[in-house]
Amino acid sequence: MATLQNKTLFITGASRGIGLAIALRAAADGANVAIAAKTDTPHPKLPGTIHTAAEQIEAAGGKALPIVCDIRDEGQVEAAVKQTAVHFGGIDICVNNASAISLTGTLETPMKRYDLMNQVNARGSYLVSQKCIPFLKEAQRRGNNPHVLMLSPPLDMQPKWFGPHVAYTIAKYGMSLCVLGMAEEFAEDGIAFNALWPRTGIATAAIDLIGGEQMRSHCRKPEIMADAAHIVLTRPARQFTGRFLIDDVLLHEHGVDDFDQYAVDPSQELWPDFFVPDDVPPPPGSMGSRLD
Image (cartoon, rainbow, N blue to C red; front, side, top):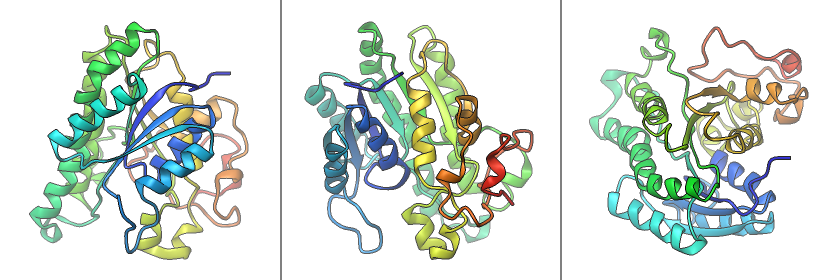
């Protein structure tokens, strides 16, 4: 069975939500995880800090390095990446999970919010990848199967994904464009670049803020993304790169048939996420947790 044992992951935004779930799945294999996030002290509305995440990672069987890092700041990112490489002896995997969202139309989006989304999503993911790549090249030389994973959508250029929230779509597609370009640029170096996206809403603290328990009940748990990410990050980097993946399709291709295990409430219809292409239907058997 493929494993992430002794691999070192640099994960942005891993103090909670999907980033933390990916970290915990890797920790279960015995991985090293650098938690690069801004939350050093408790947030008034969102649970979790880099320190509570570190405790959970170590309890799950991994080794943790909590680092305060604003991925908009080049100096902070460079220092965080170097600190991780020195502490764990290298970096094998980069997971660009940190993201900012505002589902607002053009006239309702202040430029400050536009800048935040693009600085965190597109620019931040580009920057973190750039600083990790020299260490990922070294990981390949050591035979350590280096990967970069973006939590970003397929590049499905339909107007319906742009019209309601142009700024957010630009920012998220910017992350995916990094996958498209960097997978080609670094193919000969043997570094994989892939994108992973959920078919449905995922029950995170952000969902709770937006819609509370009612919205959460129509979502899947972050663990579906963690299990899908584990599959991606254990594939051979030279062969498995430049892909835009949907969580349940990937899991089904690797033998998962029970998707009710990921539903917050299997009796409720699942609410679809943005950006899932029309020509990528749910896998057979996944409708037990119904998708409206």
